[in-house]
Figure 1 (tube, rainbow, N blue to C red):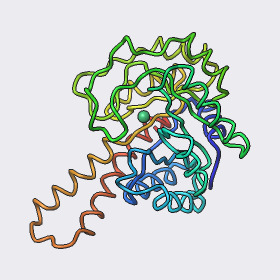
Figure 2 (cartoon, rainbow, N blue to C red):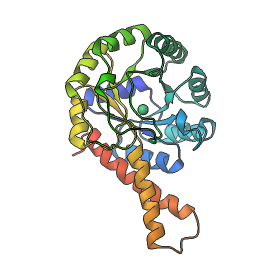
Figure 3 (cartoon, rainbow, N blue to C red):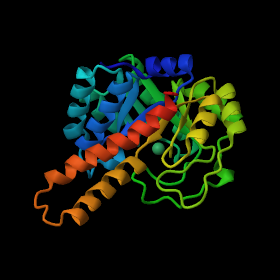
Figure 4 (spheres, rainbow, N blue to C red):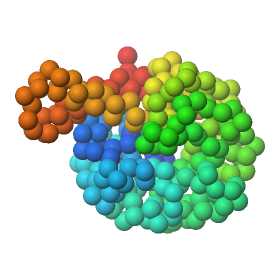
Amino acid sequence: MLIGLREALDYAEQNNWGIAAINTPTLELLLGTLKVAERYNVPMVVQHAQVHEPVNAIEDIGPVMVELARRSSAPIVVHVDHGETYEYVERGFAVGFNSAMFDGSRLPYDENVAQTRAVVELATGRGFGVEGELGIMPGREDGVESSGTADETLYTHPEDAAAFVRATGVTALACSFGTVHGLYKAEPKINYELIGRLREAGGVPVVMHGGSGLSCEEYRASIDQGVRKINYYTYADKAALEAARALLTEKPGTYVFSDLTVVAQAAIEKDIDALARCLYRVA
Ligand SMILES: [Zn+2]
C-alpha cells in the first residue's frame, strides 16, 4: 500500500529504525526491493533520481513503481530523489509519486531556501512530505563522480540546519556528516555526534545519503543519533552486475539477456535483505 513520507518516518521514530530508501531505476531493483519489504512487512521508500533519467524516464518507470507500491502488502513511499528543479518534482507528482526530495544544495543558500520552499508549497497542497538538502555531499546518485572521501569543511552546521528547516518547512533533512555518494575509496568517517546535533537543532528526521557500503554497526549508530531514512543504491546495483558477470563466466553459452535479469534480481534481493535486517533490527 502507499503511505506518505511522514508516516514512514513516524514508524521509524517509534521503532528506532532507519527506513531503507532504494533507488529503483530498473525493474530488477524495484521487484527485489519490494520482495524484501513484504518479507519483513516494513515500510520502505522506492525512489527515482533525476540522474537516472538515462536509465529509465520517470514517466516510464514511475507508473510501474506507483502501481507495484499500491499493490504491495508492505507500506511503501514513492519518492522523487534529488529533484534538481521544481518541474522535475511536478513530473513525479504527475505520475503518482507521493513524496519528493528537492536538492538545492549546490545553489547559494538563499536560492536553496526559496526553491525548496516552493516545492514544499507544491507538496503541501497534496498532503505530501518533502526532503530538503543542506550541505554538499560529494558525488552523485549515479555513483560515478564521487571522489570517495568526504571533506569536513562541507559538513552541515546545526544552526544552519535549524534556520533552513524553519524557513522551508521540510519534513526531513539530508545533511552532510561524513558519507559520500557512490563507492567508497577510503574508509568513511561518520561524525555521529554531529548527527545528534543536527537532529536536535533541525527538529526533523535526518536523512543519510551515500548509505551504500557502510557496516551494520555504522548504520545502527547513525540511526541511534536520529537518522531515519537511509538512501541506498550503488552496492545493490553492483551486486546485480557481479551476478550477471558470474553467469556469463559460468555459462558462456547464455544467449539471451533475460537470463541476466533473473540472476541480477536475485542478487539485489539478497543485498537489500541484508540491509533490511540491519536497518529494521531483525534478529
Ligand atoms: Zn543522494
